[in-house]
Image 1 (cartoon, rainbow over the protein chains, first blue to last red):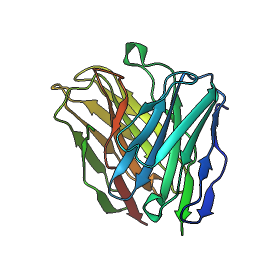
Image 2 (cartoon, chains in turn brown, red):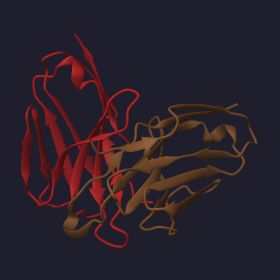
Image 3 (tube, each protein chain N blue to C red):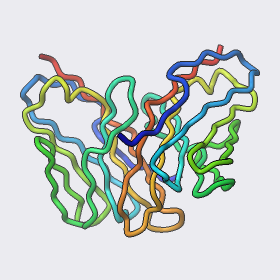
Length: 115
Length: 112
């Protein structure tokens, strides 16, 4: 069964901490994405990557960075966690969108609470 | 960034009722997708639509790609308790990176 695995389901961190959220996919997908999900706001794209060592900003990149050293792994980094970063974080992956085909495969999410 | 307008934001229905939700956009998309998110899980793809006017069914689910390419709807017939969750529409950008743009979600609650 193909999978996108997020390392933690729940995290509690203190304000100012550096936080790493890890995501691994086993489908040999080129594309990987990080979203945050907040009630009433849907899924908002933080960063995405189309290849190893490549990254592009999404709609809300402020306060975040990413790392993609290997094709299967895409890490989201909160440089200095703040309470307004308390949210559900979802990782997704996909093949390139050639021909308009293919959706994203999502992980189960990491619910991060910053106190 | 781009956004889709998804409505309604929430629905409270009785088991057995039919459900309808829709998404609209000011931009044209070349693909529309519908996802469902169960509580505590990530979204899972339900239906994908690739052509304007396309009508596709998956069991009790039916979705259509609007002929203007700016809208889509999802219908669920004869709802059951396991239909509870959040439903997201998504459109694929035509230009640029061709990323998916998501709607705000419709939270479906079913009273038995």
